[in-house]
Image (cartoon, rainbow, N blue to C red; front, side):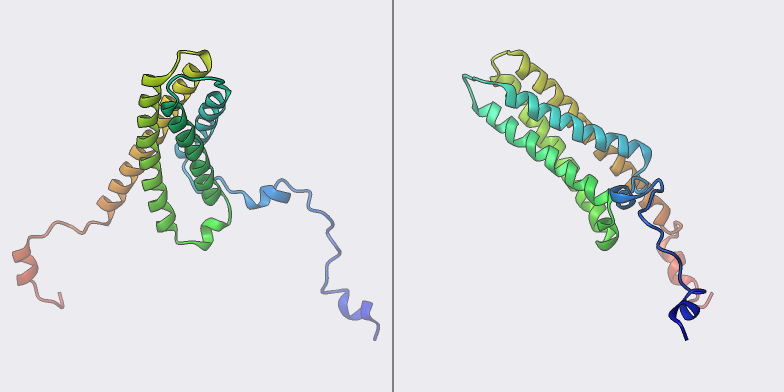
Length: 183
């Protein structure tokens, strides 16, 4: 028998390069795992922490540099951590790890980053030289820290709603002890 007669009914032609709406890297990038509001907050965290870092890097001289260096470290770390969390949520890596661990990590990373970013912004306000780049970095830093903290508040509300849904009905201890087990 010829190979064509055996394989032709069951094999498809080579489809060629994918030209659909989800080809290439876009096929591995999913935004649907986060609600719309959380996606916006994550995007703003990423953008604002990057802008704060860029504005801080433009500063050419400082008199009290400790606040500047702390702000530099925190803004860069905030950008990288928010990028990491966003990558985990939007790629197939999310399916490979325990989703409760991802959400728990996101919860604590967002809280810690928001608090430390706010503290670094306050320290930078007290030590800056009042240049336009420093003021822009401070504004972006404060807004970014509030975005992190707002995202934390939304995650906290989601956790409380989930725990309320999982709670069993309120029964008193005496009722639970007097009911038969096979009821």
